[in-house]
Amino acid sequence: MKLNIALLAGDGIGPEVVDQAVKVSNAIAKKFGHEITWTPALTGAAAIDAVGEPYPDETHEICMKADAVLFGAIGHPKYDNDPSAKVRPEQGLLKMRKKLGLFANVRPTFTFPSLIDNSPLKRERIEGTDLVFLRELTGGIYFGEKGRRDGGETAYDNCVYTRDEVKRLAKKGFELAMTRSKKLCCVDKANVLETSRLWRETVQSMEKDYPEVTVSYEFVDAVAMRLVQWPNSYDVLITENLFGDILTDEASVISGSMGLMPSASVGEHTSLYEPIHGSYPQATGLDIANPLATVLSAAMMFEDAFGLTAEAKAIRDVVDKSLAEGVVTEDLSGKNKAYKTSEVGDWLANHI
Ligand code: IPM
Ligand code: MN
Image (cartoon, rainbow, N blue to C red; front, side, top):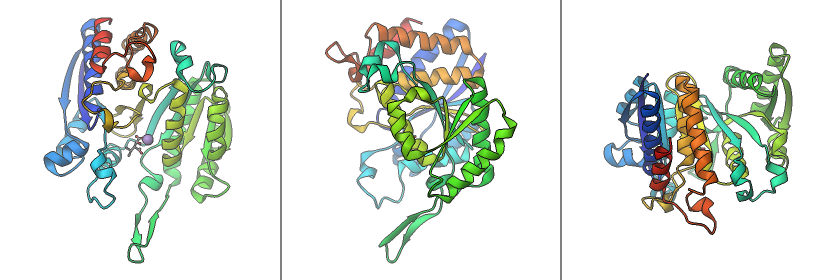
């Protein structure tokens, strides 16, 4: 099969972790007889430095023409510490999500048998956790009108959702629940927020179309607590943009390291695969970041974008093997030897 993939490495550790996912994907392509064409393109602070814009039109064209996008990370401290910056790398990510119509962000949380004791949470709480967040990605407070008034003394960010936006996300949630344990949790704050009441009302109205799915409705604050207390009680969770951003970082603690969890963003145009972690500026260029979240994002890409399940499984299997054999970066190595980012990538590629 011919696979045409746009490669958006971005900022910070993005290029380093993406390099390992490319090595692994190329090894898979060789083993299974596929031909991958990688088309690199600029995003984030790297794109601002080069062309003054974090998601240039040329990059968008490349993404639109590709079969899938593999993405690293976006963000640079020089913008974080400058609230007055007019152009920010993160705007590139938001623009990309919006222009590609990536309204659903699929973020699984699972545990690895060999890493259970790496989690700060007790083994008996987290063993067997296998849940998926579907985070709405192109609406809500991220995209509502924002600004300042009263001479800059008052700031506002509006949270806006339409029924259709909720419906299309919830539909994916119901469909996903049907392929799993048929349990769906709608996470909202309907006791306070009008947008949450629209969410709840919309999801309730869809229940009749999926009679086999058991739906629970839970407030986001309670979910934040239960998620680390009884992660096993959840399967598919649907939620709005900001709640999903926060809860998925929290959930990554269950797996033992933020450097482990992959994600897929899907919607109207080309799907995008990216680790859930950020650009980790302190580690940039040091060859120490964990590449597994990006490697596992590539596995999601083989499976979802190309329907290549054996290829995806081969990636997951070799990742499991590397973890079991202790071929891990410093976030996971404890007192044992820490491997470099590139060494982990080489090991995975060689063992495929
Ligand atoms: C994520 C990130 C982004 C988000 C940032 C970098 C804009 O935290 O993908 O979760 O908030 O969506
Ligand atoms: Mn986030």
